Length: 72
Image 1 (cartoon, helix red, strand yellow):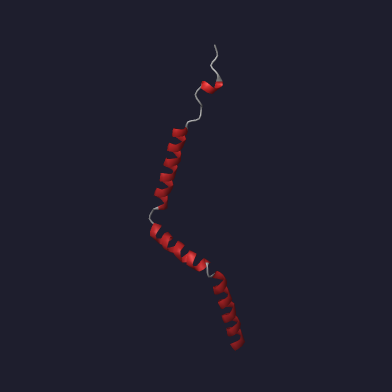
Image 2: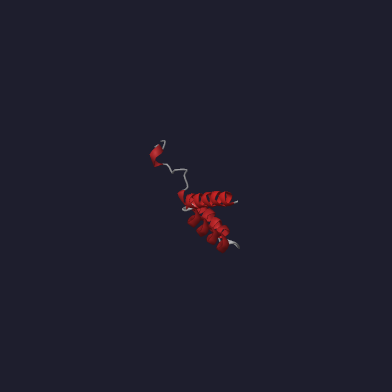
């Protein structure tokens, strides 16, 4: 007598996939916290600070450039 499809075991291995994903994540974290981690962290903070003010900095640079050109 054949076994109904719903009673057979699923070929999907949830635990194995989770373990592989966790191992991949742990390798990624280990590489991210390498030798230059503190420098990259500091540069990310500087970039985030400057990114919010990039238009203002560009406008000030243009005004200063025009001012210096007018003086010269």
